[in-house]
Image (cartoon, rainbow, N blue to C red; front, side, top):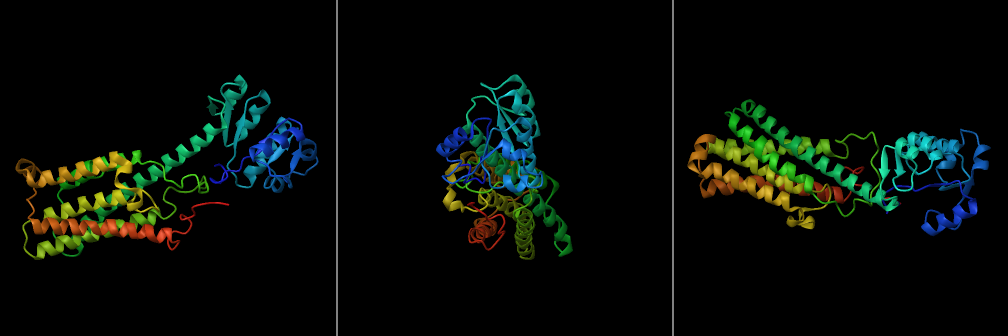
Length: 355
């Protein structure tokens, strides 16, 4: 699993080279012709050659505490993000020097636990792999929330700014914006945290530690989908206003709100289609979207609420037009993902597997 996830596992031990080779071969860290480097050989290498050696060697034996630090520093010099596990007093300096130090909670010494920022309570390496999986899922869901929130806010700002420039009246009232930000953005946005991990989450390389959260096509998505949402809303307003419909502002408000519901369902994955994911794989999000749509209809058709929000009921024709216009965003984002799957868009973000 680590190999598929782009994580290279290296054994550093004070044991005899024969013992290290036997265990590493049994675990799959080392293949039949793999090299085992001893501390004695490391001591004869110049510091300049050490990064080159660490790029290919996976097993080190009879290594001193100082050499463990040297190996970590050589890997870091190559731009690697290094996690180190250890349990003994002699592991403490290396645990401190690594990017992520993981001490053993059951068999580890107090010194090792104090030196490491993380303590593995069950002393099981598989738990680290589980933590990596959970961390990737959390980060993916943070990206989805940022994608949703920033895109929707960009669409609202663009709608308000562009309407006067193209000769249209103010498309939204302050209470409409408050509703969109608190309900339409809030409920589905929070439910994105419950999105389950994607099937390929452990078959892709780690992201660079310094990479922006907007990398991998996210900022491009924010710009063009935000512009599309605003364009659909303004087109609806222009048509309804020029047709002399009294519901023009309500239609603009409804199209913007429903467009965001289609958007949040589509961005549950950066690659997989909504059809592949299925509607019921994130039930909290499905419930949040359904509740938001019901609340949106409530402020249109329940008279006391319509009076508060200054909306007017939409007839069947106007409502169908709003639904059709809102579906444009869902279809466009699904099209974007289809291009990503074919490797025609955001090529760097489309990398799915390593090795």
